[in-house]
Amino acid sequence: MGRQPKQGLDYFPFDVGLLSDPKLRRPRQKYGYLAQVIYIALLCILYRDKGYYIPYGGEQREDVIWQVGDMLNGRYSTSAETIANVIDELAACGLFSGDLFRRNIITSTRAQKAYYTATVDRKYVDVNFDIWLLSETDMKKLSSKSVILQSFISRPINAENRPINENDRTKSTQSREQKSREKQSTEKYSIAENSRERAAALAADLERLIGTEIDDNFRLDIARLMQAGMQEAVIMEAARQTGNKHPRKPAAYLRTILQGYERDGVLTAADLEATQGKEPPRQQPDDGYLHPGSAAYDEEWARRVREHQKERRARRLAAEQNERKEWD
Image 1 (cartoon, rainbow, N blue to C red):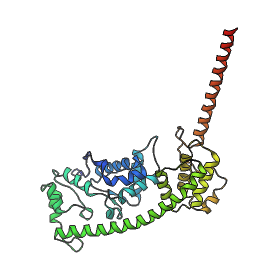
Image 2 (image 1 turned 30 degrees about the vertical axis):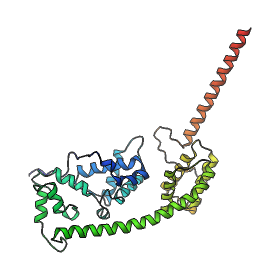
Image 3 (image 1 turned 30 degrees about the horizontal axis):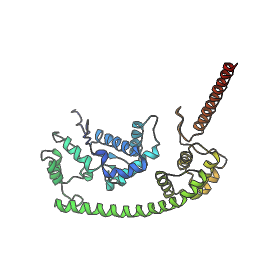
């Protein structure tokens, strides 16, 4: 039996403008460095296995999220839910094909061009043209020697594999994708805009309760929570809890409570009532480190302040005793 032909790649081109892509701006504003790291992790998985796409449906979706989480494992690891949300955002902003993502496929024109170029010298490459984004013209501009191009030209033409005229095919595909993106963008913008307005109106009350200002990034997080269905009563109750605790960093403490509510599915007043009497949910992992906003962090800070004050009093008393001895 012959050896199975290699499908994936051993390396991929990381051009200097990869992380400067304007499409990354929105995910980066929303999730910070996680957006960039998860994007690179997905590219590694994509090129390493199939070479030009990642299956992302059912158990395969869970496996991809697990692989990304394993790459991020460590002190600053994040939850599977956050990883899934970042992947959704990367597809929504156009870094991956939206149409294919809705079919549970992660791929992009950029990735397929890199794969096409890297496999030009291979004698055999297995490509599913049903999810292939490059046109004949695109491939000829890169190289006319690839076995992928020859397979594409000689593929059987049927009702599902039309049109024969490539220009019509490209324009038709682009038109459908553009209309789909415009509709999706309009709907998302309307919902997000409403949530942002509600979050801005709520911010003044939250700042009054916790005694400090809320920055723009936190307001966006609150808008996202409201868009996900979290009621204002739940957010206000989290702010009241924060005000009663008087933590050293009120905004970080409030964010921790809200993240815990989101993780535990506490979105409505009824959900909140069912959790009354319980300790507010906490996001910090039990990894041996003290995390800002946690009770242990606040207690440790208070202990160090007391020790510092005690040392200052001891030094002052010692200095006074030395002065008295000199006068005597």
